[in-house]
Image (tube, rainbow, N blue to C red; front, side, top):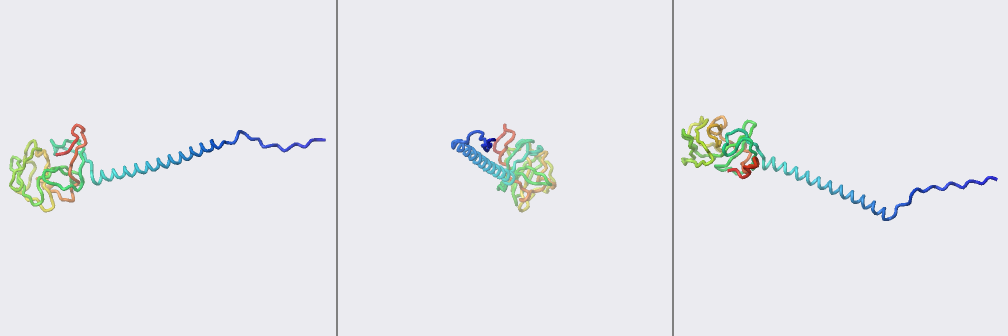
Length: 201
């Protein structure tokens, strides 16, 4: 008489994880979730700060590169400078302004309503008083087709480059006086070259 086979018992491979092991796995998974959540938050903050920095740089503190020699010896070609938007410009300030889809950099010489006169040697007078211009290394009459003395029109400023013999500026009708809506900002700080890092005067 044949014996009936007993039903096969399911085989168990390995032991069931202990409570400590399960707790370790749970803590590891929880740590990973917390880590990635923290990383995501940090990246979000960094992106927000970066975007804000770009907006500030573009809208409030534009960084400009100097081209040409019209502002030497104050600013050399290749220098990088920071400007302040909507700054109140006064005589002696250096400003950047739009002209024919370019940005030019010149020094403010006179304000709206002022009378500007330039003698043949390049000495500049505003409202009858000679300007003290220590930033100019060589005076020159330059390119000037104005009928002098010349009164600066309303809501405009009269600008000149520090390198008077080569600068084309408000002395020429090609450039003329600068309107308020053309102004990019006042140049305040040089960031390159590092050897000349510092405020602009």
